[in-house]
Length: 76
Image (cartoon, rainbow, N blue to C red; front, top):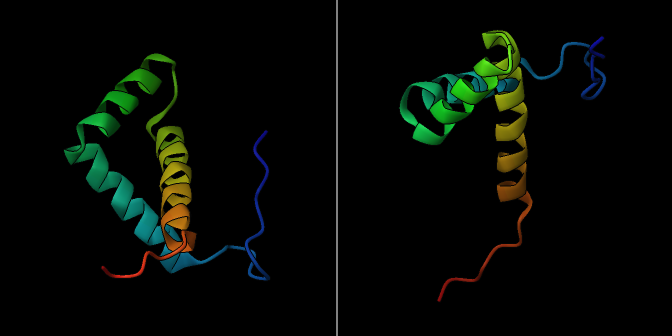
């Protein structure tokens, strides 16, 4: 059973952020070779497309968060 996560006070979370993550994932699924290989691998593990997209959105969210919170390098 999957549990719903609470992102802030809003029950549904940030719709624009979720939509953006979804768009990024769909684009990666059609263009990026690494993502396509991941989708193929997870499909052979009997995951549905919906579950694969959920996993990829989580991965992209972590990647973006890491980039946004990384210390900035001063220009040379």
